[in-house]
Length: 181
Picture 1: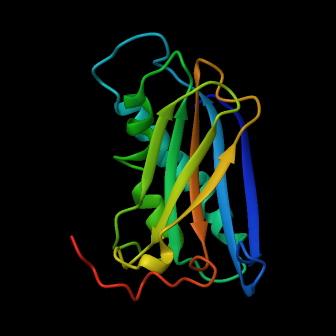
Picture 2: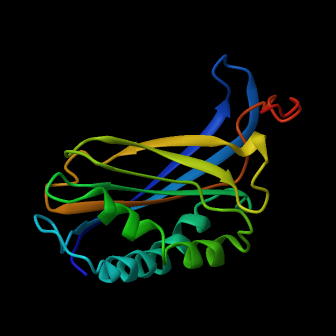
């Protein structure tokens, strides 16, 4: 695994968008910028990327959870693939093996881990979706954290992102709405 750098971003929300104070909500994103071994070429077997995602989850998730102020309740994952790569490279990093170490680190994880992937140039932002780790339909925990790496991904890199939170959105009010399809 050729990792150029790792980053931890901690965000503490103390008020909603109108300035109304709320109980502090901590969100942490662990990111790794690594060489994409398949940049510039098509391959059928992406299993080495499956393994890289799992290994990075084991390496970084416990540290991310340790930075939370309270117990983890929400999570999400994402990948930004450099422009010499393919969207499927991001999917290979975040889907088959990343979930297990994420669930282990948060002490649960009955719900699907919300995810996002895209191909983009260095400095692109990524909106990482967040959801409750055990209650897939907890509307209060449907959230997003936006991150970026100023110098990544380079064309032949992938930025892997793993997010955790210790609370819902500030002053959530959507959860009481009736569900209508």
